[in-house]
Length: 270
Image 1: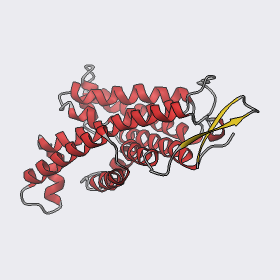
Image 2 (image 1 turned 90 degrees about the horizontal axis):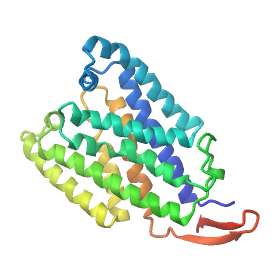
Image 3 (image 1 turned 120 degrees about the horizontal axis):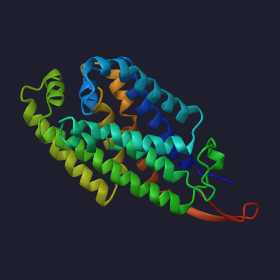
């Protein structure tokens, strides 16, 4: 069967995005990030035990990320949705603002989009998915587009609210960049991000999405510690915006071509 260039780009973008997210997240477990103790504390696990368990969780996350890169199984996509949702929920459960969960929509939304994109009647959960195996149907692509619109809306909305409530780490970044009134900067950025989020949900404009993609990358470059790992962990956010940008390209359209060898239509980009 024939597959279109943009559909392939969406598939590989989401795969790399998911891999980045879980490899970055796992790396923090391996190096025993102190704030993780709060999340283990939700289950009554003390600091000493938390530090002992972190590397095991980290290795599991890195392993899942590498599987996505080199042996992508649909069962792994499903696991990452559940695991990404669970770990994101631990933040508000440990006392952090609920916006922290919303802002991490890329962690669970990117694997969900990948699962929707690779859906087929056979739906083999334990067979490695290659681009040749994927039937880029119009229905699948519509579902992926809806999913990504919601995901990008949530991650922008969450980050916007964290700015509006003056999250300390964001204020520290603005101080580091030389802004004297970091709170005002946070309020301005937060308001713009909320407006951008609503715009994407109502009508995702191709030209706006590339601006948001660049903005998201730039805005994640100024963490004072472990900058590279923080950047990698947010791959789900970057990838979701980029995949939606591919899907909203004005010249992109899906057409039907009868493929008699498979007895079903073939959808591809022209």
